Length: 150
Image (tube, rainbow, N blue to C red; front, top):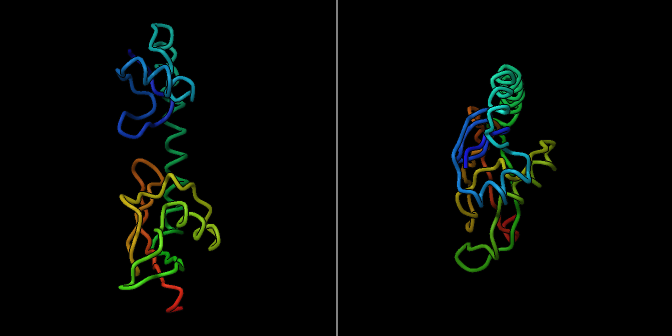
C-alpha cells in the first residue's frame, strides 16, 4: 500500500515521503494516528503543494531542537535506587525514570525521545543519547547511585 507520510516515522521515512508499507501496518497504525495519508493522485498533487510548508515546519522544529540540545548538552542527572549485593539494582532505570529526573531538573522531555538501548541495571555513570530531531541529538550523563551510598 502506498502512503504519503505526514510526520517522521522512525525506521520508515521522513515527512512528505512516498512510502510503501503492508496494508495492516497502514490500516492499524499509520492512518488512525494521522501519521500518513493514502497516496491518491489528488493527495500527491496536494503533497507537492505542501512540501514547502513541511520544509519550513521542519526547519522550525530543528531550530527548537538545536536550542534544547544546547541546554541539555552535558547535563548530569542523578537517580537513587536501592541496591543489593555486588552493587546490583533492585529493578532498573528506564527512559521514564530519566525523563522524570530531567523534569525535576527543569527540562521537560517526552520519554520516547530518550534513546536507551536497554534499561540500566547497575550503579555508575552512563552516557544517554536524546534524539530531539532526526538531525539533532544531545548527550547527557545519568548517574545511578545506591541508596545505601547516598
